[in-house]
Amino acid sequence: MTTTAQTAPESTDPIDRYFRIRERGSNMGRELRGGLATFFTMAYIIVLNPLILSLGHDKFGHQLSFPQLSAATALVAAVMTIIMGVGGNLPLAIAAGLGLDSVVAFQIAPTMSWPDAMGLVVIEGLGICLLVVTGLRQIIMDAIPLPLKQAISVGIGLFIAFIGLVDAGVVGPGKPVVTLGVTGGNELSGWPVVVFVVGLLLTIILLTRRVPGAILLSIIGATILALIIDAAATVPAHDGVSEWGLQIPSWPGKVISTPDLHLLGKFSLGGGFTHAGVITAIVFIFTLILSDFFDAMGTIVGISSEAGLLDPQGRVPNIGRVLFIDGLAAVAGGAGSVSSNTAFIESAAGVGEGARTGLASVFTGLFFVIALFFTPLYSIVPAAAATPALVAVGFLLMTQVKGIPWDDWAIAIPCFLTMVLMPFTYSITNGIGAGFISYVVLRTVQGRWREPHLLLWGIAVLFAAYFALHPIKQALGVA
Image (cartoon, one colour):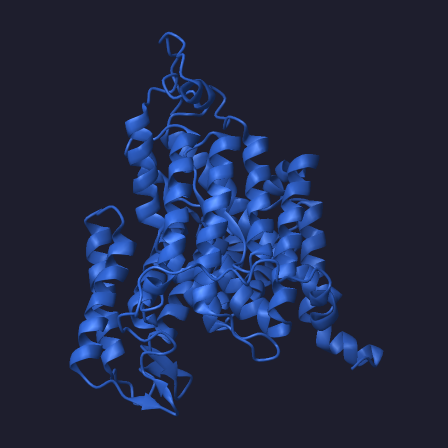
């Protein structure tokens, strides 16, 4: 969809002129409604991002505080969404990226400290900014086949869904490997599982009926059910830990509080290279750049197209500035200890309400500022109430599987390996690496070794070194 020329007289309102509101066929009321709609459809991130990150442990066994993560998540989203609105003039909101936070929590942090992991996120964001400034983004976009990009998203979706099922107690260790439930008896038990099942049913019903804010509404509904159950029934504890997990669904003593922002600035740029090794740290950074960069490109183009803002050549207005701001959002996410921030596809909800300019993003950012002061409310959301959203997000990412050419085995097999190895090895990095290496190898044995871009060959070699790091160390006599 492209814009049509507007013939309305020039406005005397400076806000109207700056954001080109009338020129784009919108008005202040539509921008406000659009900003509010976008906020409500993505406000779940204030709960979901802290949940994912707080479940992870770093190399030294440390966990991050849920209330601190919640406050920092809201603050970074507020600041970067306002900057996107003012600087990019697109109805595009920014917050911590799902999938990216899983990489940080379950893949990167266990090999180093939390500040080290967040330092790699900062470096990733700076790398994206450098790619934008130098124009290398187009070279990278062209180097990786579209089916592999789609497979990465699908694999992340499966990984997120698996994390949701495990954290909800629906899937647990057993014989031979995993079983239904956490008791090893292939059965579900406990009140938290009831909350999860009801929450999942509510989520998929709302999504199927295309209800705006479906994920947020399902989290609220499941949390209310958890509050009722916790008040009416006895939920046992095991080894001093409640079946609810770290978040107990009980009403807090106060609803409004001063946000705890102690996580801001808790990052280290060099520690990751020391604790995890140079090659491993580089692979981690590349994984973050790959996921963040391509997700952002797809989201930005998709939202701009939906809003009718693409030019006749299909280009996004101010694309260089928009991508640079998205890179800065990754830097801000690392500096705020909340993982990489990126453009959110939920911005489509605001576009659906009529938003066409960055003013809607300014409104969305202001709503995040207000949310900063309600952190105690978010702390009552148990994992069982929030994890259905992870399964739902997994489904949404899974829909991209239809774009993979399954009849071309030389690309379909790498896509398959990319998708299945992420959840099966509990590692997004492993999935991407296996996909890239197998693609290069299969194209080579077909006699089409020139088809993979030279950059892709280099990436495949890097991943091969990553997978062979242990035997390489043994061969070199390095501990």
